[in-house]
Length: 144
Image 1 (cartoon, rainbow, N blue to C red):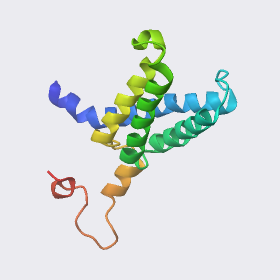
Image 2 (image 1 turned 120 degrees about the vertical axis):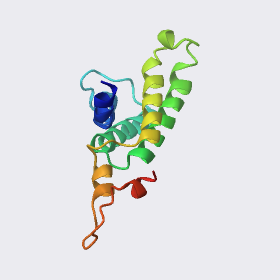
Image 3 (image 1 turned 45 degrees about the vertical axis):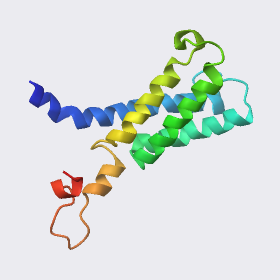
Image 4 (image 1 turned 30 degrees about the vertical axis):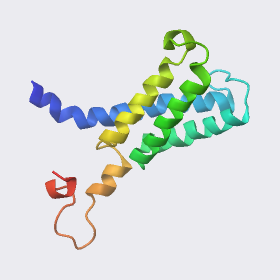
């Protein structure tokens, strides 16, 4: 049973990346467009945050530049937690920062694990250049 589940793990990684990015984009849409709900009163910091949420989320949905984008988003969520939530209370359930912490660690995981097979990154890694007889998705290519 474990072996058959392990076979699906890379696709689970892709699903985690896509779903987290879709949910993350919602926060940017709230700030910029008031959709699906009205967002907070905008300040310069929130305009920057909304742009990061929209563009970073879009890049993650596509799986483009996943590791560097996820690294930026991880740091962004850590900063959002300590700037916007932590001063209200030590406890995330009280200060409303539980989603910021969760996003932070999901993005950290994506930095470490990569994008998964359903991504622009993976397609670029596994594509062989013209005239190259050896596929790029070999154990030597993967560093194994």
